[in-house]
Image (cartoon, one colour):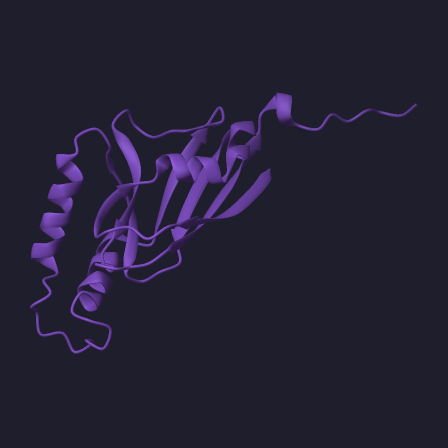
Length: 152
């Protein structure tokens, strides 16, 4: 069993859903050596989140953002307002979507569906850079396993 881990730093993004599958894969290229395993992606922030959703139609991220705006409105009478009107709604949205995603690995590739991608969900107007911890565990492919030689 092999364990791999890397930190991924993403630059500031505008509010919305941002496809980051390629950045996640690039952060831990060693997954190519795994025959079977799991990739776990965790965001170290409370006002942004991660999700897996459709990556083909650009209307999907826009519609998701619009729906979340209706669920966690800025004009709700929140008590936590010290960090601006978009902060507490961002915490609510992050709690709804979650701080991590897990994707199976098969033959060195992520087992995402045909139309699936990993999204950073930025819930603040000016959220700043974001840090993610990318961890993989799995069984190395036979060709990637160290060979052992018996001594006579």
